[in-house]
Every structure is written in structure tokens, then in C-alpha cells.
Image (cartoon, rainbow, N blue to C red; front, side, top):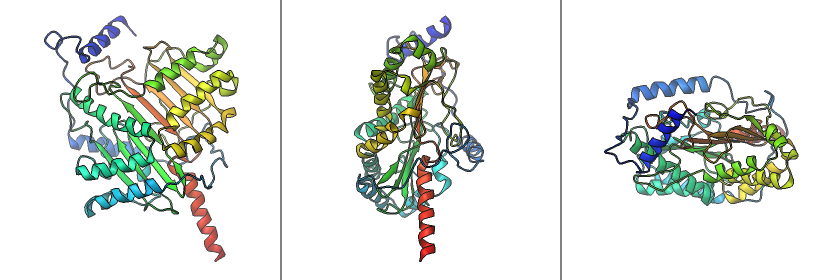
Length: 409
């Protein structure tokens, strides 16, 4: 980072914190607002390109590794989320339900986007009554852990802060700029699920019996911490940053050389964001099995932060799956390793991919150097590689079993 860029960034952050009086440091004008026609055109272009290929899944070499996922009872009930989703649907008007419900195998699953401009399907929190919003939150509480729900709500609140920082651009940002869709009919035996889709918060939640697949999962914010405004003091993804720094800085030099792919970070590095369902990502970094016992435990604890956003019972099931593949798990790093550094890291195995990325300013590009990644803009993504994002592999097996059963009748 140049001295000029650093000074500009510090000035902006100090202003946001109230350290520089508005009279001596006027806020630069926000990026111009975009009209609904422009947003729709951008959305159509993104979806057309993103869905050009049929779903395959994220892989390390272009080939899906078979046999990783199977239909099997977890012993963890999905009744709470099924009941909560039923209550949410019952709270909607006929018109709202009509635009919220899709079939369980609909391409709508793949039509999510973390960027603010995207025109989304389903019912928006903007049009919900207080009772409907509470029903939607009840569904999220049942699907997520207390931590995961709190994080999601804080992301929504920080989206309000971003609107405040962009000359009150509540047409594009804001706490209620989030949509819900439901795929299939909530059932104890048949596949179904739901999706929350909005700026910096995407929850995909597929259910089959008592099994759950809660990916792709996206979380992030710009800013990461609200230093003024309605939600001053709200902050997210701090542990995900500090615990990763503790891990990388605890490695000895030979291990650091393997883990760190690049020592400087000049752009956005996430590989599995929106429309990247089929991206190929070769393993990189240091194998988990080359870490010391204490370092390996730090890596496991770091993964638990991400898996732990789903409900506690199913998070334990997922962590068992993750631990069973630690001998094929890799940890990779790009960027600096100081507390104020912008960095990227990835944890990758056959059954999970976690990405954390400090990105360049977008909504705050009038306040910070738009060419330099900042710790005030973070994206994280969790994926289930090898064909099981959105529960696709489980759904395929379910249909095959149904077909096989029908042939025996």
C-alpha cells in the first residue's frame, strides 16, 4: 500500500469514527445511484452468464469425486425448521406465497448473488409485515445456530450502515433488502429447502429427512464495523480473522513457506462466490497433516467457526464429516500477516471449502482507495464441493432411489 493510499484510508476511517469533525473533513460524494432498469439489466446479464453451464459442482481437477455423500439418518431432527418454515408460509398472502414457492429442483437455488444490484426472486423483507418478518426470523433461528442467526442479523444491520454511508441510498442497500424463497414443500420425508438472498448474506438450506446441507453459505459486510449511525458498534467476522492470523503466525518458517502462496494482496481473491458453482480449484498451501498437533487443532477450531453457523446438531454432523477428511485438507494464505493486514485464506478438502477475503471497497469506494483491499470489506464463502452444494448429490440419490423403487412395484 502506498503512503498516499494509507493516509487516505486512515483519514476515511477516522472520519467514520468521528475523529475528524465533519466541518474540517467533509464526506466525499457517494457513487451515483443506479436506476431499477440498470439494476435489472445487470441482473439478467449476471444470471445468463452464471447459468450457462449445467450444475456440476466445485472440484479440484474438473472431476467430481464420487461416493462422498450418502442418504443416511443423522439422528438430528429437522422438525423445528420444518414447522417454522410452515408458519412462515402460512403468514404470507396468496400472492406472496405464489412468488415465494419453487420446486425443489428448480434452478432458482443457483440464482443468488452477494452484490447489492441483483434483482431477486421471492418475498422481500421490505414488503413483509412485522409478523411476517418475525416468522421469517423464526425460520432462520431454527436453521441456524445462535451465532449464525446473530451474524446474519448483524449483516443486515450493517447493510443499513452502508446505506447511511452512501448518501442514504436505501434503494440499493438497507436492513430489509433481503428475499426469501422456499423450494419444495416442507416435509418430514421429501426433499425441500429455503434460501435467504441479499447483499452479503446468503443462506441455502436443503433438507432431506433429518439430513441438512447448508451451502453455499455467504457472509460479509462493508463496513465490517459500524462506527456511527443507527447500528453503531455492530461488528462481524472478527474471530474468523484473528484466529486465522494466530494460526498463520504460529507456523515455523518451513510451514509458512508452504502455506503462504503470495505475501502481498492486491485484489479480490475469492473463487467460489456467486455463479461459481463449477469452478475448478486445485489443492494449494500446506496439507493439514503437516501441521503440529496444536496447529491442527487451531485449524479445526477455525473450520468450526464457519460450520457452526448452522444449527448445533447438524453442525456436529458436518464436523464429523470434515474430520474424516483431514488427511486431504489444505490451508492456503495470500497477503500480509499483521493485525491490520488485508489477507485471504482458504481451507479445502473433498467435503468443504472455506474462503475468507478482504476485498477492495465498493460501496465505500468514495471513502477508501478503490484499488486497495481493506479490512473494512470482507467476504466469506462456505461450499460443499464435489457436487453437493444445494444438496444436489443427495437429491440425485433420492430421485434414483424413487425410480428404483417404482420399477420394483
